[in-house]
Image (cartoon, rainbow, N blue to C red; front, side, top):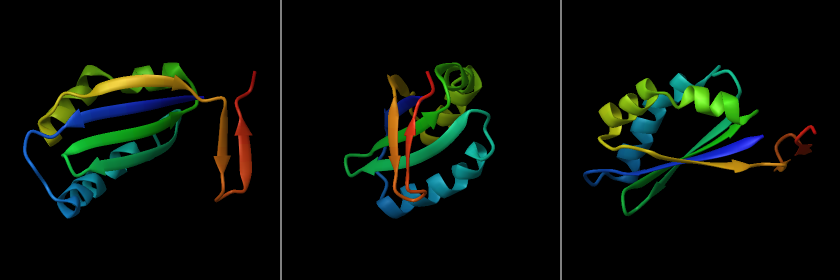
Length: 104
């Protein structure tokens, strides 16, 4: 599994409620995406937006973060994203009461 951290700074200040509204508007775009297990939207008071994505593998993540996706972020938020990848060998999921270990 791969965790991708996508981060960008908003060009203008917005409130947490405004960020939540934008996030809810874009969330359906991520439903049913091939290889995407989970996505979290994070917001910091300094107007930093962070997306945390858990992917089945790096290939799925890299395929998703296309030029069109980057343009969507620029059009929606006015900022170019920074994408970083991390190997994710183990996930603890307290909702499903599972410890998920990446297959070898």
